[in-house]
Image 1 (tube, rainbow, N blue to C red):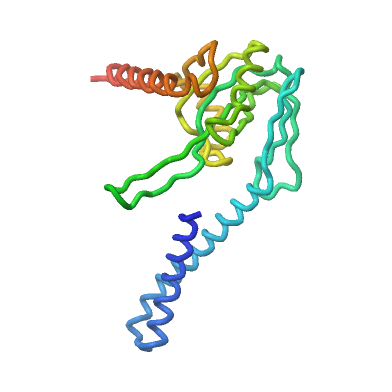
Image 2 (cartoon, rainbow, N blue to C red; image 1 turned 180 degrees about the vertical axis):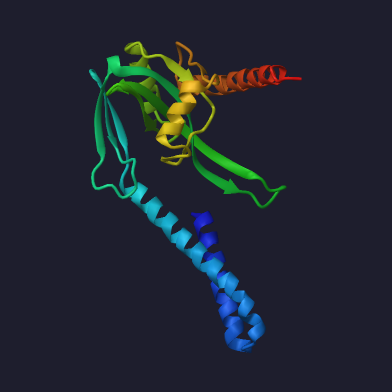
Length: 230
């Protein structure tokens, strides 16, 4: 929200200041400021688009529900869609589930040296096979303390679903950084995914898993470096 406000203010300055200067001084030399007006208009259009997109996602939440027979999804994956995509995923169709994070918000710090503070929450990426191809559905949770995370993990273990983990964040809020195809490509080719422990819940394993994941990806990078031609 702060970021959008900043963009709106910046767009207003880009448009307002040049217009004021041209009205106040009426100098032909100020015509070059029209470039800033155009940039401000484009920035304003972009800001309005982001606000509308965020409002649409706030009104259209995708959901995934556990059932004894499998998983039911209601997915609003396309902005502006008239109706959601509803799917029923039997347990037999679930290939694996990869636990990860999604970025909930990022706060820019202006004191104590600056930097950014990132707030995250868990997400489960469900990989399943239907209609002759691999597909993906993502289950978003509100926070790391959300008890529903452990409910899902327990049910997935109960039905023998392979559980993995990656600290690679693929989602921003309830949107994806990558397209569905790109996410599927990542999971099909990456060696970053590590096994999720057979016991314990999310909070019990999260820190340990992240440390293990960073060590694992570090080794992958070292191996990639040694495999480079000399």
